[in-house]
Image 1 (spheres, rainbow, N blue to C red):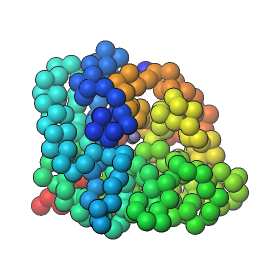
Image 2 (image 1 turned 90 degrees about the horizontal axis):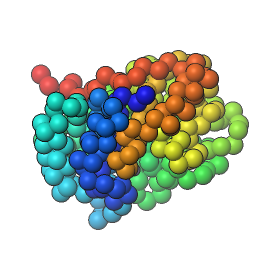
Image 3 (image 1 turned 120 degrees about the vertical axis):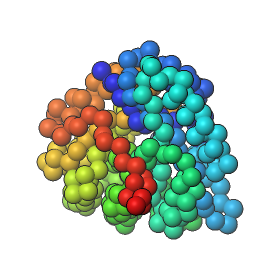
Length: 263
Ligand SMILES: [Zn+2]
Ligand SMILES: [Zn+2]
Protein backbone atom coordinates (compact mmCIF):
# COMPACT_ATOMS: atom_id res chain seq x y z
CA UNK A 1 0.00 0.00 0.00
CA UNK A 2 1.12 3.51 -0.79
CA UNK A 3 1.79 5.20 2.55
CA UNK A 4 3.78 8.17 1.28
CA UNK A 5 3.74 10.42 -1.76
CA UNK A 6 6.03 13.36 -2.43
CA UNK A 7 4.74 14.05 -5.95
CA UNK A 8 1.50 16.03 -5.76
CA UNK A 9 0.25 18.88 -7.94
CA UNK A 10 -2.39 21.59 -7.55
CA UNK A 11 -4.57 23.49 -10.01
CA UNK A 12 -1.98 26.28 -10.19
CA UNK A 13 -0.17 24.33 -12.92
CA UNK A 14 -3.33 24.57 -15.04
CA UNK A 15 -3.51 20.85 -15.81
CA UNK A 16 -4.58 19.45 -12.43
CA UNK A 17 -7.98 19.34 -10.76
CA UNK A 18 -9.41 19.58 -7.24
CA UNK A 19 -8.97 21.90 -4.28
CA UNK A 20 -5.69 21.72 -2.37
CA UNK A 21 -7.41 20.32 0.71
CA UNK A 22 -9.10 17.58 -1.31
CA UNK A 23 -5.65 16.08 -1.97
CA UNK A 24 -5.02 15.98 1.77
CA UNK A 25 -8.43 14.57 2.57
CA UNK A 26 -8.03 11.88 -0.09
CA UNK A 27 -4.57 10.99 1.26
CA UNK A 28 -5.82 10.69 4.84
CA UNK A 29 -8.75 8.57 3.74
CA UNK A 30 -6.44 6.34 1.69
CA UNK A 31 -4.04 5.73 4.58
CA UNK A 32 -1.19 7.92 3.32
CA UNK A 33 0.97 9.01 6.25
CA UNK A 34 3.30 11.46 4.49
CA UNK A 35 2.16 13.79 1.73
CA UNK A 36 4.42 16.23 -0.08
CA UNK A 37 3.13 18.91 -2.40
CA UNK A 38 5.42 19.44 -5.37
CA UNK A 39 3.56 21.48 -7.92
CA UNK A 40 5.28 22.54 -11.14
CA UNK A 41 7.48 25.38 -9.95
CA UNK A 42 7.43 28.90 -11.25
CA UNK A 43 10.48 29.74 -13.33
CA UNK A 44 11.89 33.08 -14.37
CA UNK A 45 12.40 33.04 -18.15
CA UNK A 46 13.26 35.94 -20.42
CA UNK A 47 11.82 37.89 -23.34
CA UNK A 48 8.28 37.44 -22.03
CA UNK A 49 8.36 33.68 -22.71
CA UNK A 50 5.24 31.99 -21.38
CA UNK A 51 5.42 28.48 -19.95
CA UNK A 52 1.90 27.10 -19.77
CA UNK A 53 2.26 24.10 -17.46
CA UNK A 54 3.55 25.65 -14.24
CA UNK A 55 2.40 28.14 -11.63
CA UNK A 56 3.32 31.76 -12.25
CA UNK A 57 5.87 33.43 -9.97
CA UNK A 58 3.16 35.53 -8.31
CA UNK A 59 1.25 32.39 -7.32
CA UNK A 60 4.11 30.99 -5.26
CA UNK A 61 3.22 32.89 -2.12
CA UNK A 62 -0.38 31.62 -2.13
CA UNK A 63 0.82 28.08 -2.78
CA UNK A 64 3.23 28.20 0.14
CA UNK A 65 0.60 29.64 2.46
CA UNK A 66 -1.97 27.03 1.45
CA UNK A 67 0.40 24.10 2.07
CA UNK A 68 1.67 25.53 5.38
CA UNK A 69 -1.88 26.16 6.58
CA UNK A 70 -2.86 22.57 5.78
CA UNK A 71 0.27 21.31 7.50
CA UNK A 72 -0.99 22.89 10.71
CA UNK A 73 -4.64 22.08 10.24
CA UNK A 74 -4.10 18.37 9.54
CA UNK A 75 -1.07 17.81 11.75
CA UNK A 76 -2.78 15.12 13.83
CA UNK A 77 -3.77 13.12 10.77
CA UNK A 78 -0.92 13.36 8.29
CA UNK A 79 2.58 14.73 7.85
CA UNK A 80 2.66 17.37 5.09
CA UNK A 81 5.74 18.74 3.35
CA UNK A 82 6.19 21.74 1.09
CA UNK A 83 8.03 21.03 -2.13
CA UNK A 84 8.25 21.92 -5.81
CA UNK A 85 8.90 19.98 -8.99
CA UNK A 86 11.39 21.81 -11.17
CA UNK A 87 13.53 21.31 -14.23
CA UNK A 88 17.22 22.01 -14.33
CA UNK A 89 17.52 24.83 -16.85
CA UNK A 90 21.14 26.02 -16.67
CA UNK A 91 20.47 29.56 -17.90
CA UNK A 92 17.68 30.23 -15.42
CA UNK A 93 18.46 27.95 -12.48
CA UNK A 94 20.09 30.59 -10.28
CA UNK A 95 17.18 32.98 -10.76
CA UNK A 96 14.82 30.12 -9.91
CA UNK A 97 16.68 29.48 -6.66
CA UNK A 98 16.53 33.15 -5.73
CA UNK A 99 12.80 33.19 -6.45
CA UNK A 100 12.09 30.34 -4.02
CA UNK A 101 14.74 31.16 -1.41
CA UNK A 102 12.46 33.31 0.80
CA UNK A 103 10.12 30.36 1.39
CA UNK A 104 10.52 27.36 3.71
CA UNK A 105 10.67 24.82 0.87
CA UNK A 106 11.33 21.36 2.34
CA UNK A 107 12.44 19.70 -0.87
CA UNK A 108 12.68 19.82 -4.67
CA UNK A 109 12.11 17.03 -7.11
CA UNK A 110 13.56 17.22 -10.58
CA UNK A 111 11.22 16.58 -13.48
CA UNK A 112 13.08 17.46 -16.67
CA UNK A 113 10.18 18.21 -19.02
CA UNK A 114 12.33 19.98 -21.62
CA UNK A 115 15.96 19.94 -22.64
CA UNK A 116 18.12 23.08 -22.76
CA UNK A 117 16.22 26.02 -21.24
CA UNK A 118 12.72 25.15 -22.42
CA UNK A 119 12.66 28.20 -24.71
CA UNK A 120 13.80 28.34 -28.32
CA UNK A 121 15.17 25.13 -29.82
CA UNK A 122 14.62 23.02 -26.68
CA UNK A 123 12.81 19.71 -27.06
CA UNK A 124 9.97 18.45 -24.89
CA UNK A 125 11.28 15.32 -23.20
CA UNK A 126 8.04 13.40 -23.73
CA UNK A 127 7.93 13.94 -27.50
CA UNK A 128 9.21 11.05 -29.52
CA UNK A 129 12.69 11.58 -30.86
CA UNK A 130 15.21 9.51 -32.78
CA UNK A 131 17.93 12.15 -32.40
CA UNK A 132 20.82 10.87 -30.33
CA UNK A 133 21.80 14.45 -29.49
CA UNK A 134 18.49 15.02 -27.74
CA UNK A 135 18.80 11.75 -25.85
CA UNK A 136 22.26 12.58 -24.52
CA UNK A 137 21.36 16.19 -23.86
CA UNK A 138 18.59 14.91 -21.59
CA UNK A 139 20.90 12.41 -19.87
CA UNK A 140 23.53 15.08 -19.26
CA UNK A 141 21.05 17.65 -18.09
CA UNK A 142 19.49 15.40 -15.46
CA UNK A 143 23.00 14.47 -14.41
CA UNK A 144 23.81 18.15 -13.89
CA UNK A 145 20.59 18.47 -11.91
CA UNK A 146 21.66 15.62 -9.62
CA UNK A 147 25.13 17.15 -9.25
CA UNK A 148 23.67 20.36 -7.81
CA UNK A 149 22.82 18.40 -4.66
CA UNK A 150 19.57 20.33 -4.40
CA UNK A 151 17.12 17.70 -5.57
CA UNK A 152 15.59 15.05 -3.31
CA UNK A 153 14.88 12.76 -6.24
CA UNK A 154 14.55 12.52 -9.99
CA UNK A 155 10.96 12.11 -11.19
CA UNK A 156 10.18 9.95 -14.22
CA UNK A 157 13.83 9.57 -15.30
CA UNK A 158 12.57 7.58 -18.30
CA UNK A 159 10.43 10.49 -19.60
CA UNK A 160 12.66 11.06 -22.64
CA UNK A 161 10.95 9.23 -25.47
CA UNK A 162 13.85 7.78 -27.39
CA UNK A 163 12.87 4.25 -28.32
CA UNK A 164 15.28 3.13 -31.01
CA UNK A 165 16.31 -0.05 -29.19
CA UNK A 166 19.97 0.66 -29.95
CA UNK A 167 23.11 0.83 -27.86
CA UNK A 168 22.84 4.66 -27.52
CA UNK A 169 19.72 4.16 -25.53
CA UNK A 170 21.35 1.86 -23.01
CA UNK A 171 24.35 4.15 -22.79
CA UNK A 172 22.10 7.09 -21.91
CA UNK A 173 20.24 5.07 -19.28
CA UNK A 174 23.59 4.00 -17.82
CA UNK A 175 24.73 7.65 -17.55
CA UNK A 176 21.58 8.53 -15.63
CA UNK A 177 21.64 5.47 -13.38
CA UNK A 178 25.35 5.59 -12.58
CA UNK A 179 25.11 9.26 -11.63
CA UNK A 180 22.00 8.67 -9.56
CA UNK A 181 23.94 6.04 -7.64
CA UNK A 182 27.06 8.20 -7.37
CA UNK A 183 25.15 11.24 -6.08
CA UNK A 184 22.68 9.13 -4.13
CA UNK A 185 19.63 10.59 -5.86
CA UNK A 186 16.72 8.13 -5.99
CA UNK A 187 14.96 7.58 -9.31
CA UNK A 188 11.18 7.56 -9.34
CA UNK A 189 8.90 4.95 -10.80
CA UNK A 190 6.10 7.27 -11.85
CA UNK A 191 2.57 6.12 -11.16
CA UNK A 192 1.01 8.64 -13.57
CA UNK A 193 2.81 6.83 -16.39
CA UNK A 194 1.24 3.56 -15.24
CA UNK A 195 -2.19 5.08 -14.64
CA UNK A 196 -2.33 6.80 -18.04
CA UNK A 197 -0.59 4.02 -19.98
CA UNK A 198 2.16 6.41 -21.04
CA UNK A 199 5.53 5.45 -22.58
CA UNK A 200 7.02 5.20 -19.08
CA UNK A 201 7.84 3.36 -16.85
CA UNK A 202 10.10 1.98 -19.56
CA UNK A 203 11.34 -1.60 -19.15
CA UNK A 204 14.66 -0.95 -20.91
CA UNK A 205 15.48 1.78 -18.40
CA UNK A 206 14.57 -0.13 -15.24
CA UNK A 207 16.50 -3.18 -16.35
CA UNK A 208 19.65 -1.07 -16.27
CA UNK A 209 18.65 0.60 -13.00
CA UNK A 210 18.47 -2.92 -11.55
CA UNK A 211 21.89 -3.87 -12.87
CA UNK A 212 23.48 -0.72 -11.46
CA UNK A 213 21.49 -0.89 -8.19
CA UNK A 214 20.59 2.76 -8.15
CA UNK A 215 18.22 3.83 -5.34
CA UNK A 216 14.57 3.80 -6.43
CA UNK A 217 11.44 5.41 -5.01
CA UNK A 218 7.82 5.70 -6.14
CA UNK A 219 5.76 8.84 -6.80
CA UNK A 220 2.05 9.19 -7.53
CA UNK A 221 2.47 12.34 -9.66
CA UNK A 222 -1.07 13.20 -8.59
CA UNK A 223 -2.89 15.73 -10.76
CA UNK A 224 -6.22 14.85 -9.12
CA UNK A 225 -7.05 14.12 -5.46
CA UNK A 226 -7.87 10.42 -5.96
CA UNK A 227 -4.41 9.78 -7.42
CA UNK A 228 -2.55 10.42 -4.14
CA UNK A 229 -3.50 6.93 -3.04
CA UNK A 230 -3.39 5.08 -6.35
CA UNK A 231 -2.73 1.64 -4.91
CA UNK A 232 -3.45 -0.25 -8.12
CA UNK A 233 -0.60 1.55 -9.92
CA UNK A 234 1.57 1.20 -6.82
CA UNK A 235 1.18 -2.59 -6.99
CA UNK A 236 2.21 -2.50 -10.66
CA UNK A 237 5.26 -0.43 -9.72
CA UNK A 238 6.19 -2.97 -7.06
CA UNK A 239 6.07 -5.69 -9.72
CA UNK A 240 8.63 -3.66 -11.69
CA UNK A 241 10.76 -3.44 -8.54
CA UNK A 242 10.62 -7.19 -8.19
CA UNK A 243 11.10 -8.03 -11.86
CA UNK A 244 14.32 -6.00 -12.22
CA UNK A 245 15.62 -6.51 -8.69
CA UNK A 246 15.53 -2.77 -8.03
CA UNK A 247 16.96 -1.21 -4.90
CA UNK A 248 13.69 0.17 -3.58
CA UNK A 249 14.21 2.57 -0.68
CA UNK A 250 10.62 3.66 0.03
CA UNK A 251 10.32 7.31 1.03
CA UNK A 252 13.51 9.23 0.26
CA UNK A 253 15.34 11.39 2.75
CA UNK A 254 14.32 14.99 2.06
CA UNK A 255 17.11 17.28 0.92
CA UNK A 256 16.70 20.91 1.93
CA UNK A 257 17.53 22.75 -1.33
CA UNK A 258 19.37 25.45 0.62
CA UNK A 259 20.79 23.28 3.36
CA UNK A 260 24.32 23.41 2.08
CA UNK A 261 24.19 27.21 1.71
CA UNK A 262 23.64 27.65 5.43
CA UNK A 263 26.57 28.37 7.65
ZN1 LIG B 1 2.04 17.93 -14.46
ZN1 LIG C 1 4.82 15.94 -11.63
